[in-house]
Length: 117
Image (cartoon, rainbow, N blue to C red):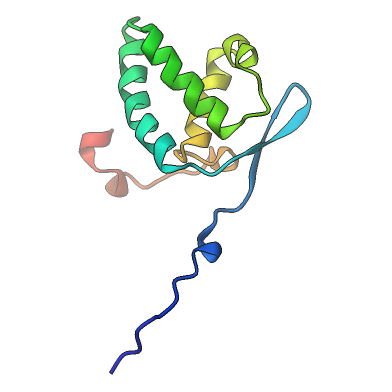
């Protein structure tokens, strides 16, 4: 007979602290909340539209909300001035898409699936 767990310790599930460097300063990246996760779904749609030059004020608002919630120590004006490659990498990093230290990691083709290549 298996033992059931009577206590769920969520403290042990907290992600490791992460940081970004911008303007010569380290900034803490706060863990994603449920609200940010919902915004990240809208972010994907906004980024898709941006590829075709269709960025709305609402799209920009979603992007700023995600960025500011994750890194409140960087002012919105700084996000506005970031070069697109840096901004893209930052959004990927804070939404959990890619760890920037693992950029050179390669994945075997059979793990990617043909529809993703």
